[in-house]
Length: 490
Image 1 (cartoon, helix red, strand yellow):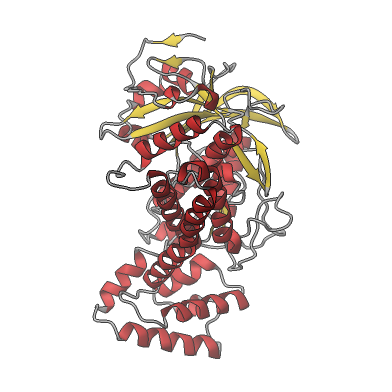
Image 2 (cartoon, rainbow, N blue to C red):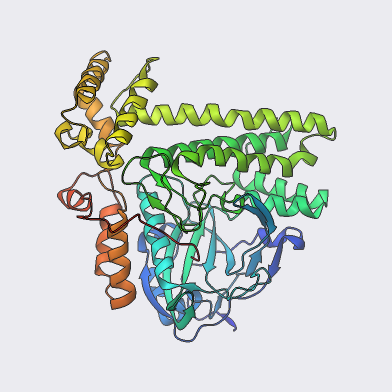
């Protein structure tokens, strides 16, 4: 593999991670693939990155997206990290992903460009370092849907098929995803540095994270406490948004919590249909550790692991450091509840605050659980003023709740139109319904037909538009042959 300098797609790399202590990564190039073919490409994202779409769609551009060529200015590396996986600590690292470089966008922002499924690295732990086409397309769909919902997320620039089969339970076509992220710094990155026990490396990583994501540290008495507090804040805001749209990540290991506040790693994720706090989609989450209702507490647990890694930097006196960490972590619940309640008010069209608002929301959710109501479609029906379309309609308890809700709206100064607009901008008309995602993937992987996926992506790109096409995509499947299951290995 050689550097390719024949085209000028707009790469503008500055590889700051490669200037960190070398123990935090391994320099290596992606493994070449046999017959790369571009199967989907994100033109709007490319433009925002300052990249030229036609150049990247060319054979030379696809060679870069497949890992067969390294663009000028890139310094490919695999990042090392550790993590608690379902509560058990292990040393990990990017076993099948290579960070090819950090793109500086026309607006001066920095974005990681990573190839996922690009071959073995020193962290592969016996794996083949490859990825299957279906899961890479799935990450493309869900990450772009999350972006459309206004939720911080890594994004997908392209998927390239490799022309090579990979073996999972069956033989599947191989693929590589080009993932774009504010960074791939994780809680697990700090766990790795802390486990090595070299304080200066830990400090270098913390300084780097502050400079990259939280540069407003001037005047802070304790910069590393500030880092912990800001990460807690962003995660609380993020998880609240997950809960408000019914998103279930499925594998909230500490190596899947990004310090930038972005959602990262779309493995066994899915969106909830029937409202139930115990909803689990992941085939390997037998105990429900990462169930929908557990996500806030798991996030707080993960952040406690981040705080543990930071202890040597928080204060030289360990008891004092522990006290600072515990106080910062305790803020998570407060910030999460504040953001969740503000979001729930918006979903109900409530523009101001009253003490009873939380019980009003909780009562609705309780009815939804009791009557097995669809989460997204219940709020969609309320937004459209069609309570008859909810599963609870006609019951005495819903009639009473609806009267209380209408009375609550009547006590605010804002107009009915303002309330209605707030609901439309807070309740998506469409989410990536599991059956729609699966039918798009089946057509793409088994038939080479990407039209269903492209149409689905179009519908999901502006989920608050309330178009007639979105109404079609909001419909539930006619029947479910059993509980929906998703799988790791993406």
